[in-house]
Length: 538
Image 1 (cartoon, rainbow, N blue to C red):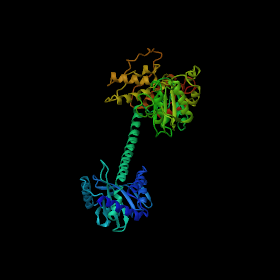
Image 2: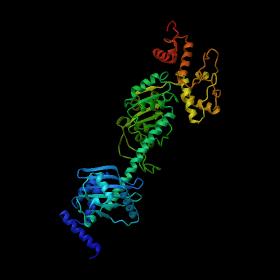
Image 3: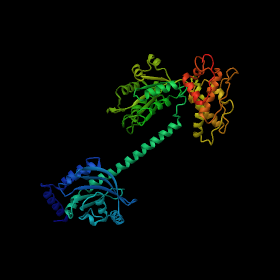
Image 4: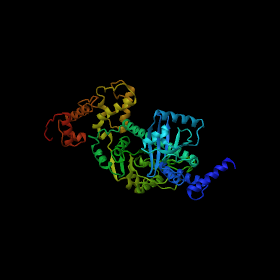
C-alpha cells in the first residue's frame, strides 16, 4: 500500500471514529469550506469552522493572526470561542525570545521549509505561545499552529487551542492541514477588507477636508446677510431643517449656488454629499445618463455601469441648476424622483431607492414656460413648494463694499499675491452707480481683472465701461478699502445718514435706502458707535 493511500485510509478510519459515521476526505473538505468561505464576516466564518471541527477534533477556541515584523508583535484579526465569534484588532507584544522565534519561523516559511501544522502540546514550553495564553488569561493548553499561504501578505496563521496538555496527535494535525486552503482564502479576504475599510476612512476624511477648502474658496460666507439678503437668509433658515423642495429664482450671477450650499450646510443632511448639476450644460442625449446613471452596454460607449448624480447625492442634497433647460423626457423622469424618490438607470430594470433633498434653480420664468408648453405643469407644482427670489445686485448695493472686500481677499489668495492692495481714492464710487447686469459674478470678475492689471495697487476700475457720473449723483463720502469690515460698514452707514440728513425711519430714510428694518439699523449703529442725529420724521 502506497504512503498516500495509507494516509487516506488512516484519515477515513479517524473520521469514522470521531464523527460516528463514515465521512471521506472530500466530504469533510466540502462541508468545512462551505462554513469557512460562506460568510464575508471573518469572525462568523471562524465560529462556524470551530463548531464543525468540535465534532472531529478537540478544540476550545481558534485565533486568526498576523505577524507584524515592523513592530515585532502579533496582531489577532479574529477569534472564536464557545461564547461566539468576534472580529479583533488586538496587538499582542512579544518577549525578545518570542520575537526571535517568530522571525525564524517567518524565514523558514519564506524558504518553504516550514511544515504544514506544528503541534505544541504544552503552551508553557513555547515563548510565543506563553505570551498569547497570558494575554487571554488561559490555562496551560495544547495548540496546533498552521501557517497560511497569503500571497504578498505578511506571515499569517491560525491557532487551534485545546484544554490541557498532550491532547493533539499527528492525526489531528492532518485534519487541520486539509483546511489550509480555505482558511488562507478567508484570511486573505479579511486582510483585503481591512485595507479597504482603512482606505475608505481616509477617503471620507480627505473628502471632508476638500469640501471645507472648496467652501472657503467658493465664498461660502453669505455676504449681505444683515443687509440686502436679510429676508433671503430668514427664508433659508426656515426651510433648511426640512426636506421640502426649494426653488431658487433670480438672474444669472446672483449667487443661487451659494444660497443652495447654505441650505444644505444648515440642514440635517450637511454630513451627506452636496451634488451640483448645470442642466443647461449637458447635451440632451447625455442628460438621462448624467442624472440617472446607466448600465453596462446600455448604449454605444457604455463600457461599464455608472452612477448618476441622483445616486451620488443619496443621503444628501442635489442642486439642479438651470432646471428650465431640462428636455421633456428628463422632466418626466425627474417628476418620478420627486414623487416616489426612486430611479432606474438607463438600460436597467432595477428600481433604486433614494434619500435625497432636491433644490432647483433657474433664471427663467417657469410659469411663462408652463403656459407656453415648454415646461411640465405637474413638475412646476412639485418644485415650486418653497420659492426664494434672490434680488439682483443693483437692488442690494448696500452690500457692494463688503462684497468688494471679500472678493479682493479671495482673489489675492487665488492669484498668490504677496499683499492685499488698497483701493485708489474714489475707486468704489463708480461701482455704487453701476447697474451690474452680471450681478455678483460680474463684480467678482471685475475685481480679478483689476488685480491682474495692477497687482500691487492701489486698485481702480478704469478698465470698466461705466456710466459717467454727474456732480449731483456722486457720493458725498468715499469709502476706502480697509482691512476691517466694521469700518467699511460704518463708513457706508454714515454716508447714507449724510444723504438722508440723519433720518433713519420712514420713506427715504437710511433704513429704507439700506433695505433693512429701522430697529436693525439702530442696533448696528449702536454696535459701531455711530451717533444719532434726531430729525423730524425720524
